[in-house]
Length: 146
Ligand code: FES
Image (cartoon, rainbow, N blue to C red):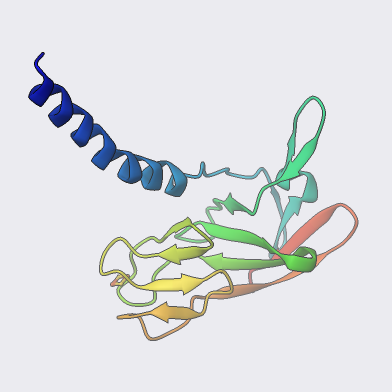
């Protein structure tokens, strides 16, 4: 490889590095929580947010709840002060399933964006996401479906 080829190869690698970093950053793994259903409530153990390692415990920002009671998954987002917001992952524009990452929901179909409370950030969607009331006790989060 001569000097010119070497510089060209390095240049391509350096140009691609920020893109690879952005892709890896946006690829947070989706964790599907275990849960049970009691009447009209989905019960998610608080421990589903924990990531337990040998020496420490960290917490997931969100977990996904995939119940047959809804056509789309529900994203259960943990906000400051340990409040939980449950949003249906269905875009209010034309019904595509949303992606979650980077502290927001985004629609792969036409680009709508929503914050973690389900509020529209960017159209074409003009309605907020469907959200469900949540309550919490010492062990569980309860998502009220009806
Ligand atoms: S279906 Fe989501 S933006 Fe159109």
